[in-house]
Figure (tube, helix red, strand yellow):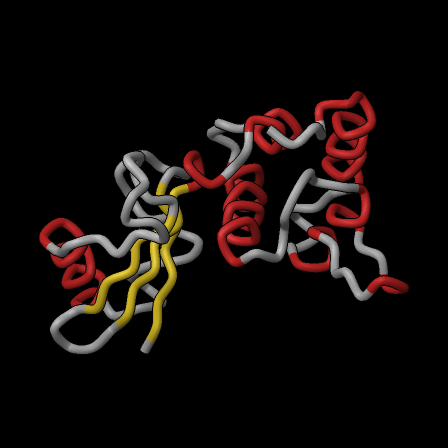
Length: 156
C-alpha cells in the first residue's frame, strides 16, 4: 500500500485532500504520523544541506509514505503565478500538483501556457485536465495565464 501526502498546505500537517484518515484507516494514518516523526528521511541528495522537498519512509506494517513539501518544491516563479502561500484550498491543491510535478520531473523549467492548459498535439496534459472543475474555474485559469503573461514565469 502506498499513500502520498503533502506538507506545506497546512503547516505541520498532511494535506487532508490527499492523506485523509477517512481514505486511509485512522490507525494507518496515526502510524504514519508517528513514523514520520521518528524515521530517518530519505532525501534526493544526501549532500543537500536544505530540508528535502520529498521525504519517503516505510512504516513497520509496510505502508510506503511519500510526503512532498510544497514550499521547498516550488520555484519563486511558481509561487508568484499560483499566489502561494495561500489559505485557499483550491490554490493549495494546485500548488500541491505543481510541487509533485516538479519532484517527479514532469515539470522542468518555467511554468508555461502548455503546462497550465495542456497541449494535445505535444501530448501534454494541463493542470486544467488534471484538477476538478471546482478548482480550475475559468476565473482561476484566466488569473494564472494573466500572471504568466506578465513575465513572472521566469524560472527561479
